[in-house]
Length: 224
Image (cartoon, rainbow, N blue to C red; front, side, top):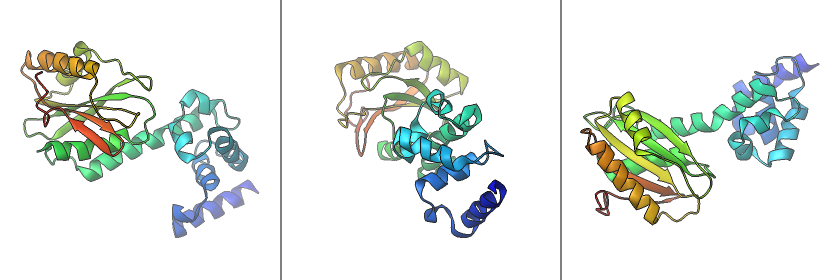
């Protein structure tokens, strides 16, 4: 019975795409690949009952997902991959690898997808080459809603690890207000000083708050 249902759902996806699926069918289809011989329909409904909607499921802590009956470790890993993969995909669509970040506007367009759906504060160190092309977007810190913990030593280590010539710093304000706090300014100056002391320039420090953003470079605040 399960095999026939699975084949029908897979065939429907191949013929019609995901647009014709409701939320529980999306989860049901995904869980086929972590639960090859189980009925995933009930598990999909349990996930939506527990977390509320697809975005909440995909942004949930893997440990919480794993405790939902029928999910397990493999299912939790699979579901937890969706949001970060989507963020990386969208960033690459906006700014394909190999194209330089030549302005704060381009940098903002690249960074915004990396912040999509975040309910906690996160801090990125985007390592750039000598032509301002992205080498690697490193997620350095996940904090609470109000703070992320970042040290100059960590940022320098990441920049050296990825052979950065220039660094783009970025974090989000889940509150929706991109205005930099006093702590944001102090951190920026400390990071700029630490990186420049080893010959690595800071392209910008961006704060993303939904559709709003703030550029330290445009505000001439990178160096205090």
